[in-house]
Image 1 (cartoon, helix red, strand yellow):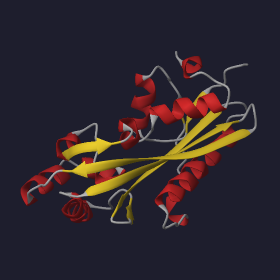
Image 2 (tube, helix red, strand yellow; image 1 turned 180 degrees about the horizontal axis):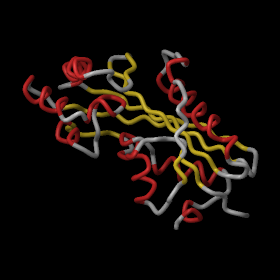
Image 3 (cartoon, helix red, strand yellow; image 1 turned 30 degrees about the vertical axis):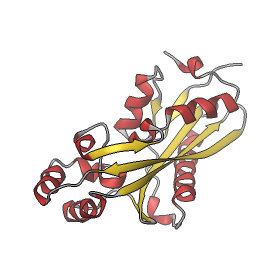
Image 4 (cartoon, helix red, strand yellow; image 1 turned 120 degrees about the vertical axis):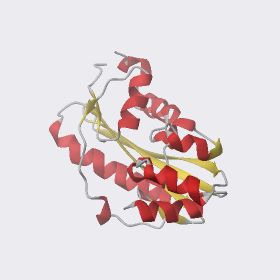
Length: 197
């Protein structure tokens, strides 16, 4: 079996770093898909649809590649949250998140152009947030990091200080579940090691 090029349909530096850490050096092709046109009250379904739309937007540019799309949201008390729009929204979000538990959902899609197959999955990880003072919340939001991330925190950055523990896949919280990627590649007949460079 020929090993196709691996394309990441995402502008996320965290997802790119995760792939590079495990030896995959993808072609990065952000989709610029307008996420606001998709609505769903089911976080698992929402991230799958968004990930698929991102991958499908990029797919026509690559005749025989393997295209990966991902999308993440945080759900707290049944309410879905993406990236906060501004600092005030991030502060309000952290007032809700601190001393609480959230579910971080990431949708994963692989489109294998050479086999004309698409696999769609999602992964969920429980995130336990620490109690925080107003001062700590304001200082964290001032770093700008919460404005770049679904759920208003980055586990691989300053945000890790305010996460007590997680239950489930660690890399899923960063934006891409590496164990799930390995399983999806196997479903398509590949070893993850086929993509090492």
